[in-house]
Image (cartoon, rainbow, N blue to C red; front, side):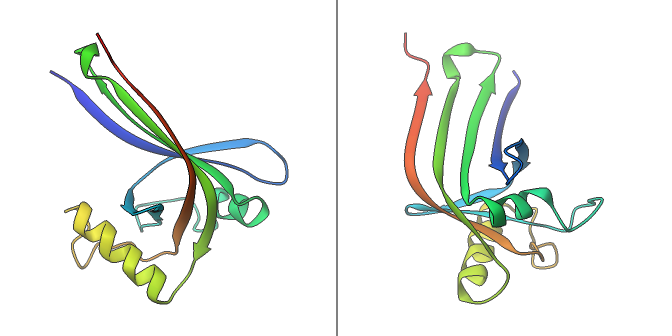
Length: 129
């Protein structure tokens, strides 16, 4: 049986064009953190970071797809984002991400900034018979 759980970050900049990317994330109470890791990218001047500088309102959608549709669900977090380059907030966010994702060993922990989202609203759906 195939199951897939993915989170996506939605941003818009001054041009009001939506931008949607898959992300790694962790939760810390009413705050969500997103790492910018060193996986191959065409640039580190990422559009999501520029968009947040221009418009901090974001949405994050996490969902699970399963061939058994009774297992489907999604949750959406809307909030205000900030890009954090260094300091204790970034270090705490990196600790949360490393704890959640075994792929982020000490050597592979995200080296870029982190996106910190203060969640203002939650919504969601799950299959109900």
